Image 1: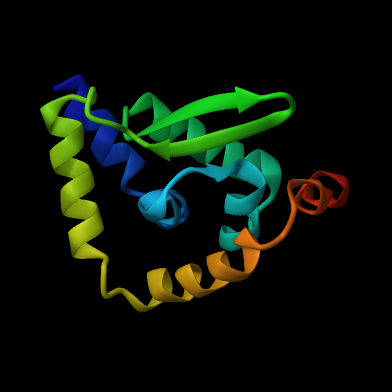
Image 2 (image 1 turned 180 degrees about the vertical axis):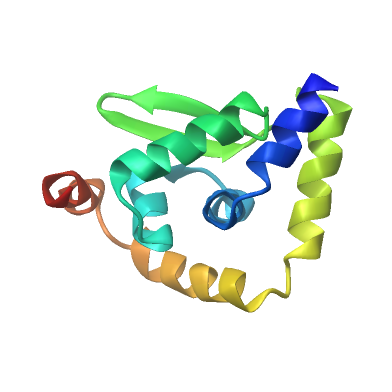
Length: 121
């Protein structure tokens, strides 16, 4: 029951769902996610913590950069089912399509360029 409630809480916010959907095509640095969802670094970090607590995403740190990806094969069946449902349900959503287009532009920027998001916060 706890996992179910954590997942539904995580998926109950548009910004969290948008952040989750940015990871559909692979791992991203938190600064890339910040640029796509256009929220402050602290807000995005909080959203990512909620998604991670629900088991929907995984995080790794490389120096000062934090990287996120969708939960892998080791995730519980409930998490895997929730991810499949979210990805399928939103595959044709216009907001998610806009975010995908933004992500294409963001992916070509360097990590150093993207860390400027912290100076603006």
